[in-house]
Length: 188
Image (cartoon, rainbow, N blue to C red; front, side, top):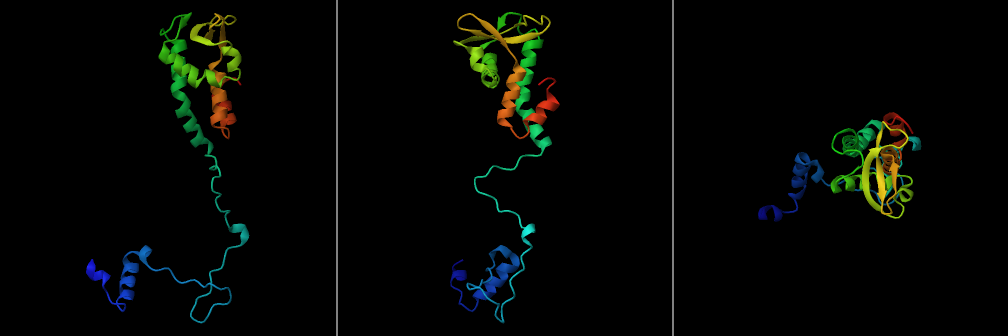
């Protein structure tokens, strides 16, 4: 290594030549002209630029990335919401909770954080305060089970987990939300 550092100046071009042959990235960059004008006898002419219509706009620093193609975004949305959807289906359609039963703290936290906070009228539903989340039969549609907010004043009110999911998707994936909702939700 020390011998390489003490090479005479005459050997330097040879080292650069070898370096450029085995590691092109290590070669010296050609010198550029500082002043505009016609090339001199020893310089090649500058490369011609493509027409302005063919040039891509330079990326803007801090600009949002272009949206993903829909199928890639769809896969990402599904990965994001599928665990919550499976939990809700398990809560509503299994023997895990009986009618009128409140959710365990773990399930309640997931429902509140991942769903209820995104409901379009979450503040109206929670009202004076949230006491629990309960599963029961819908008062009008007795065959369907749904989730209810049990408020601190004793009032309980139903909420649609699908409305919550739609609002979540619209907020987190705005460029693909409407198409995703159209293709994956039965009602809007």
